[in-house]
Amino acid sequence: MSEARIIDGKALAARVQEKVAKAVAELKKRHGLTPGLAVVLVGDDPASQVYVRNKGRRTVEAGMRSFEYKLPADASERELLDRIAKLNANPDVHGILVQLPLPRQIRTSAVIDAIDPEKDVDGFHVVNAGRLMTGRKGLVPCTPKGCILLIKQVRKTLEGLQAVVIGRSNIVGKPLAHLLLAENCTVTIAHSRTRDLPEVTRRADILVAAVGRPEMVRGDWIKPGAVVIDVGINRVKGEDGSPKLVGDVAFAEAHKVASAITPVPGGVGPMTIAMLLVNTVQAACRQKRVPVPKVLKDYV
Ligand code: GUN
Image (tube, rainbow, N blue to C red):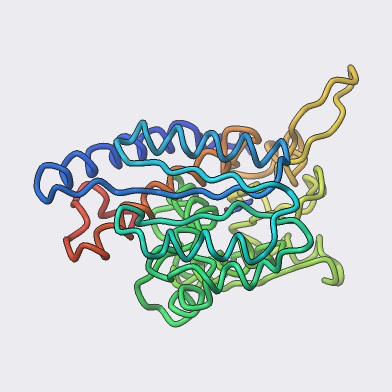
C-alpha cells in the first residue's frame, strides 16, 4: 500500500474564498447587496480571540462587511441577548456568530435560541438543526460542511460507503452524521462510551475523528484505503518542549494505512471559516430574496 494522499484544506479554502469574493462582487453589482457578518466574542480566551480576528479579516477580504462586538468576561446573559436582538433587527447584518464557548454565567442554549434562524450562519439553532435532519434547505454548521467538501476532493460519490464519526457534539459529530447520511453513507456515530472503538473504526471507509483527544486514533484502527478526516486541534508539548498542534489522529501511523488524510494544521481548520463566508452569502441572498450566485452552487 502506498502512502496516503494529503488532502490540502488550506488550498481548498483559498479556492472557496476566491469564489465567495466573486459572488459578493456580483451581488453588489446586480443587487446593491453587500453581505454582512457580525461576530460576538464574550471574554478574552486567547484561542477565541485569534479565531474572531481571522473571521473578521477573511470577511473583509471577501468584500463583505464585518461587525465585531466584544463583551467583558463577566457580561450577563441579558447583555448578550440584548446585543443579539439588535443584530437580529439590523438589516445590514445577514449573519450572526457568537463565539463559543461562553462564560459559565451565560446559557449557550438561550443564546443560540435568540439568534434569528435566517441569520444563524453557524447552523446551531434548533430550526436549522431540524432542517438538516429532515433534508430541507437551511444553514448547515461550518466544520461538518467543510469535512464533506474535503472528502469529495478524493471520492466522487459517497453512496453506500461505511462512515464512522467519532464524536457526538452538536457542532461537529451530530450534524456531520446527517450530512453523510444525506450522501447515502451508512453512518455510525461512536463516542466516549462506545465499546471496542478500534473494532468499530476498522469498518470505516470514511473515518472522521472529532473528539479533542490528541492522537487517539492509531494506525491499526484504520481500514487500509480509508479516507481519514481529522477535526481535532490539540495543543501539546513537542519533543523539544515547544508547543505544537496535533490532531485526534496519529498522523504518521495513519498516513501509512489510509488512502487519503487531512493534516493538522492545514486540513479541516481553514475550511471552517471558508464555509462561514459561504453561509453568510447564502443567508444574505435568502433575506434579500435574490438567488445565490452560480459560482457558489457547489457549496449551498
Ligand atoms: N467555537 C469553536 N468552533 C466554533 C464554531 O464553529 N462556531 C462558534 N460560534 N464557536 C465555535
